[in-house]
Image 1 (cartoon, rainbow, N blue to C red):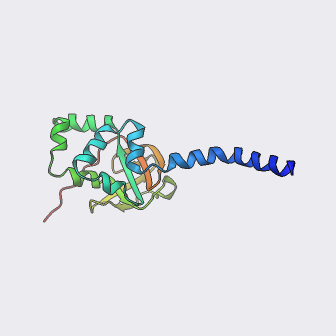
Image 2: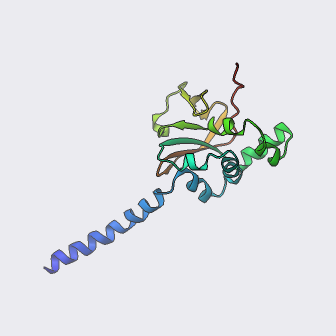
Image 3: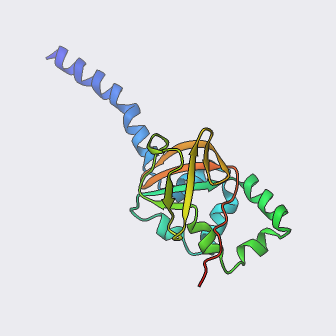
Length: 163
């Protein structure tokens, strides 16, 4: 009886870290981005565009997440303020261009593959180095409960849709 009790106690102690890891993984892609602390402009843009609830949905989603530094570089390039960016009529399209349906891990990538975004246009993946269009993937495979985030160093801008 003592051996069984000791075995059960040992197993429960070994399982504790696994349970804690699962609690962390339960954050959705939005909460994971918020917790990371380097995506404040992205999160504000998602709120402004009304996409927070969508990305808190069941998914799964693959999000190519530009850092605050990537947004700062875009603002400088376009010579606009963050407020002007958040007021753009195409903000939702820009953000949806960073999201792919399904959970695509770095191990799933093939050089030259094209992936359709929720915006409707394709992004092109390169693998040496790993890039999405011209943006470098600086940190891949941040797992969330409803998908995965790949951190990128540039904001992706979709080509204007032709009517």
